[in-house]
Image (tube, rainbow, N blue to C red):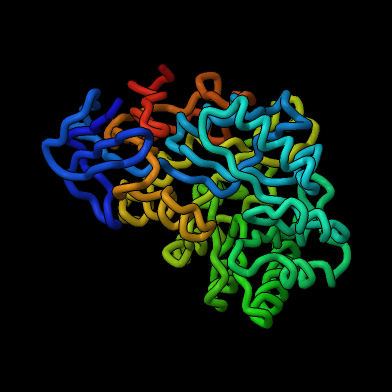
Length: 396
């Protein structure tokens, strides 16, 4: 069966144009006008986007499935417009061996409704496992966070830098979590400088996760082969919100002052992509000190607030949530509306207004740090591999 998405304003070649998109056998077969298909979706008044890609999520399976699993997390992704997500390795059962990677891959294939790819965790002693697993990307923890994957031997980072194929991406967690902001940032900046210097010395690609200040972006961009991501909660929340949220406001890296939040906005045009860092925990676990926010279902609408406020172009937002991510991580056929590409499409109603209500979210944790916030722009339809799986703001 073929499917045509008609009369929408489509994001093609980094700009928006009025085009129809035809999908045959799960692939985009034609882009034009007045196209015909066995089935049709009318996208009049809507934006037609490539399926969004999130390079930084924590779907908790295996190990902590009471917080999230591949079924609930992937449904949250689809509801947020993401058809591909990249899962982090610091589960309760970490992804640091070939067997664990194969287990995760199998579980996701059985349960997920979107595509789930996996970053492999690098440790001080799993260099042989990295070779056996042959992952497409790796994550190195250079500072403490949830889990126990932090590198303790200073030589391990460079050893992984040299041993991992240079055409593949290494993602870096470089932040410190000291309670005092200036101490936190001094350590974070020093870690980034060291990682950049090491990568530059051997000419390898690196990617900086969840930058939360403008200076982190500036440090990353001193090296042409370092890309950097920003999570929306660092743009829309600060230490003032952390105080309001109480224990719910704990996240790694910690939320920053209003001044540092403004610095992040000023540096944002230099950022390469947007990542949610979707890190769901139950309310009970948050009360016990767990760090992290759910974010898959609010990320796109939050970034659209930047457009509504005249701070960002729509093209900038969508590019950094689709094609840029595909380029950074070598995801061929994804992130663009082009002939031969994967038939993953997100149809956005840019005018739909809604209020964040945790009880209505797909994520298993059922809460949000943006609870009660009024947003504009909502995912109307998602097509996965040529099949509409989410329509009229709900799953079929």
